[in-house]
Structures are given as C-alpha cells and as structure tokens.
Amino acid sequence: MTPYRLTKLSLAIGLSIATTSAIASPQAFMSSRSFAMGGTGVAVAHPAAAGATNPAMMAADHHEWSNDFGLMLPSVNARFADEEETVDQIDDIQDTIDRFQELDKTSNPQDARQAAGDLRRQLNDFDRDTVRIDGGLGLALAVPTESFAVGFFTNGNIRATVRGEFDEDDEQFLEDLENATIPELIAADLDHDLESRGRILASAVAEVGLSIATSIELQDSSRLQLGVSPKYVQLRTFQYTETVSGFEDDEFDSDEYQTDKSGFNLDVGAAYAFGSRNQWNAGIAVKNLITMELDSAASRPDEEKRTLELDPMVTAGIAHKGDFHVLTAEVDLTEKKAFGYEDDTQWVALGAEFDAFRYAQLRFGVRQNLASNDDNDGIEEDTQFTAGIGLSPFGARLDIGGLISDADLGAAIEFGAAF
Image (cartoon, rainbow, N blue to C red; front, side):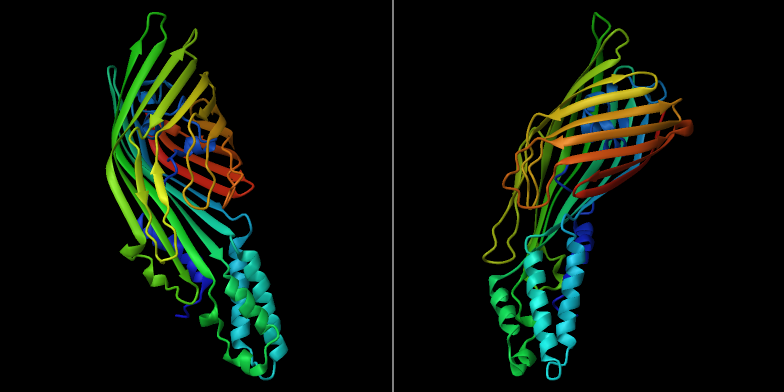
C-alpha cells in the first residue's frame, strides 16, 4: 500500500468507525417520523419512539389504532455534510500527486514544476475543510396498558469527521519545487516528503434502557402523563492524526486511538393533554440527568485532547392534534456543546403530519439552530428542512424521511408496527 492515500483516509473513516462503534453518537437519536418532522417529538412521539424522546408519551392518547402496542424494528437514519466539496478536493489532490510521481522529470521538468504548484494551491484550499458523517440506529418496543405503559429501547448515533490540515513546511517545500532543478525534482518523493496531516475525529453515545409511564386523569378531564427511563449509557471517542506519509489504514482499530466510558443514567418526562377534546398536548423532557464526561486519546504528542460531555438536555414542546393532522412546535431549553469540528446546537423546530384515513401520512418540518457559533471551526449547523411519508396498512408501518440544508443531506427509514 502507498502510505499517502487521502482517498483511503476518507473511505476508511466510515468503515473503521462503523466497525468499532456501530450504533453510537453524541447526537440524540430520532425516529424516522421525528426526522421527517424537524426533529420534533417531545409532545407528539408515538409509544415506540417515546423512550428515546419523552417517556411520558408512552401513556398519552394517540390514534385509537396506535395506543396499545408499538414496535420499531429497526429505525435507521444518516446524514452527510460536505460544505466545500471536500471529497472532490481529495480526488483532485490525489490525481495531482500521482501525476507528479509518474512524470519523467528529466524530459518534462516544467510539467513537474507545474504539478508542484497545482498541489500547493490545492492543499491550501483543502486546509481546514471538513467532511462529516452521521448515522443512527434504533430498536424499541412499547406496551401501554390502562394503568402503566412499559417499553424497552436501545439506540444511538455516530458522528465522524475527516479533516485536512496543511503544514506550513509543505508550503515552502512545494514552492521550492516550482523552481527546482532537474536533480531536485528527481529527488522529491511526495509520498514521503510532505508533512500535511489527515485527522479523524469521532464521538459516540449508545444507550439501552426501560421506560415506564402512567397517565393521571384530572378533574377537568385533562390528563397528566409522567414517565421515566433508567438506562445504561456508553460513551466512546476516536481520534487519529498522522502525517500523510505515515498514515496506515490498518491502524483504525487500534485501542490507543480510542477511549470509552460506561455508566447508568436517567431520562424523565411529563406531558399534559388539555382542551375540550384534549386536542392540545404540552410536553417536557429532561435527558441525561447525570453528567458524564470522557476525554479523547491523543495519537501525537502535539495533539490536544478533546472532552465529550453528556450534559442534561431539556426540551419543551406543544402540539395540536385532530383526526387528520398533528401540528407541533418545540425548543431546546439548554445548549448542547460541540465535540470536534461542529457547531454548538440549540434547536427550535416546527413539525406537521397530515393523515389519510390512518393508512398514509405526509410529514414536513423545519428547525433553526439558536446557538451562537461565531467561532465555528467546522461545518455549520443552521436551518434544516425535512419531509417524509408514512405508510401504515393493517398495523404495519413504513416511515421514510429526508433532510436538506446548506450543508447537510440526510435520509431515514423505519419499519415497525402499531396497534
């Protein structure tokens, strides 16, 4: 294998992290229905999705055909962000390196000097550009009863970034090659002489837990739902930085680049149904009541460690439902700190679902990041638009969702059942 292969670097991140942390990420998991409705769910989550969103919603009244049993098997979502067409840049850089290496410098010195100049400009443009990949997977089972609702869930996401870092020494090295003599061009070996780096950074959270919820009817016929989800959580980080000359794709599963930590945690939630027909529902959820932290590994002596923080997150929402529609709005009351090359996030979101006689649903959503990110060091999290459909014949469910923003493209699919 030629050690300097940026293309292998970009591909190996997806393969290696999927192998080592297949269902984990610091981003909160969302069902495909929630994905298509702008990430909402605190006041509208169906029973199978309630464990990951607001456990109180397991005991809430939904449609008569989805109140008794819920199954998510499985729910999968993915997002890809590449603001600066970084993958295309990697291909172009690799082509230029190959062109320089294959040239006969004796007969074509000017072409070699031109290739060195092209590479210098490409690496400058590539510096600090980032590719981000998110993936999620969830399984859940919910069984509401007249007194209590009980559910099981396991879910998680993965967020991984690939980033280029152009070394200042390479600036001078390539600039010198633009005016080099034939012997100097022959002696140059871009597979070994460059000091620019490739960096991989990933963070992960996986969880498995039980949800318990109950509903209390109040004197005015309104209803209060309360829920709790004790769970076991695993955090994981992966950090690998190496000069392009020393990069080896068989190092990705090495323990020295990974850290992990596990422990018990707790989610709690409440929902309040009110109105003449209890058509309004207000919900609030607090996830991860116990703060957890994990430092990343440092693969080089000059590399800083990063801290993955799992702090309590509070989200509130309100929804209006009818026989053929659900409209909802929600907001994060706390800010989620970024890990790595990404924005802090605090979302405000709107979602809508229109039902066609229980057999099909059309969904839309939009959400906006309220967090201040003036010092953003990666891919921007700003406004996201979502849409999707649901098919639910005879109790079976198929939900599909899509997401688009200036930086992201995403999709989600979910199979399940509801009675």
